[in-house]
Length: 163
Image 1 (cartoon, rainbow, N blue to C red):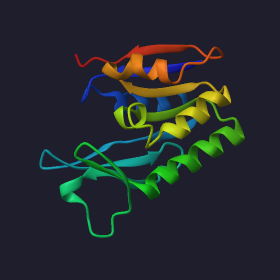
Image 2: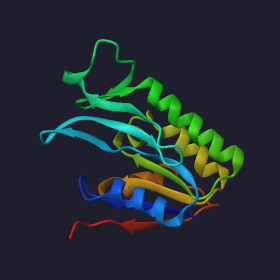
Image 3: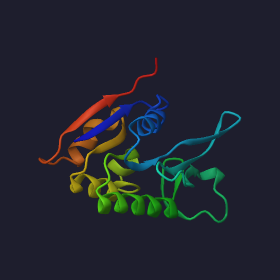
Image 4: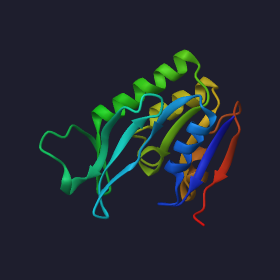
């Protein structure tokens, strides 16, 4: 079964996945925590849960360093080719080793509307039949289900709300 962890922006979806992984003590995948400096978003990182390995994933276009390895842009953000390839290697290893549960944070407009970013790894992990958790913004849930629908799995939403 695949659980969709849903909520709006800044409602704690990434924090929920990090704590769920710690609580379960098994599985693997990645989260994309924000890197803030003086209440300003500097970038998003990608962090493998089992190893703690971190690399820059996305940043505002106006903050990109000269050596940034852009794969694509969406809105005001640029996404790193190296980081997306890293996420693909993490997911490939999860599938190869049949590691459950898996964790993917986050499948959003880039993947659903542009079919870029984590789109292909989302398809792969769903097709694998493994159980796990995928973070999806609340307003993208129906589009996600329509895009990635399959008869062999069931999506069970877990809605995160700030209290």
